[in-house]
Image (cartoon, rainbow, N blue to C red; front, side, top):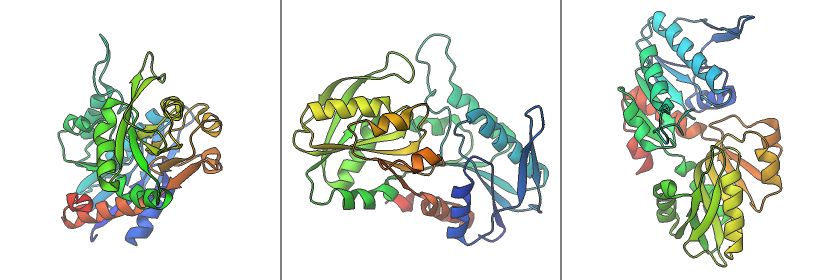
Length: 313
């Protein structure tokens, strides 16, 4: 970690501090503030000349504000003669807009990738992208980190002795669910989801055997929790003994937390890629597991030129 520095925006300061604690390095001194008209202003308060700088910033709600912070922090570091700038984006906003699903629609995930590259970032580290092909939207290296190693220990302990089945909420998540099922040596199933409108989901069928089993739904993010709640109802209807949700990114927008409290879900397990709100932290059904050590190890390996992929082998 010689000649490497870590900075952060305002989106997830606790995670950045936890990463610095793991690496035993200080968090870089900077200030992010707003002018009265809402413009973002960044001041870097220490020399970064010739340093490899890592900027930790989830582009979570308010998404546009946090993207602008990342871009402006990058510009400030570039103009301060940083040797290289790696953006550590635990949660990549706009990832669900990764393709055209209707005529005259944008591909916003690609637009954000272009903005990040143009700002001067030389490398991106991110966690559990909604769609793996987003890596190809960048013309710079992307290290795609998987949260599975963070979850596995907790899942093994929670479901010890249970006849467990891993369930994907849709066909697109089957690759993720299959990897969990392989690691945990458990069964595999999926629900058939239809999405009539954004943030709306209808669970039509359950494909696979879940009767009498402890079910773990595996997804990359939980936003309004509509999909998970409907999937939970369908799985209980098909005879599942219990249903829990394991999701990397806890967006938890709108009335999601209240809905989770009243849902058939036994537990919702998330990471701190998005800083949990006070309401989420106080909900007995929500378990937050920190991803700081995994991110810290990835940062250390990038800074020292070691392999990232060996973290998951």
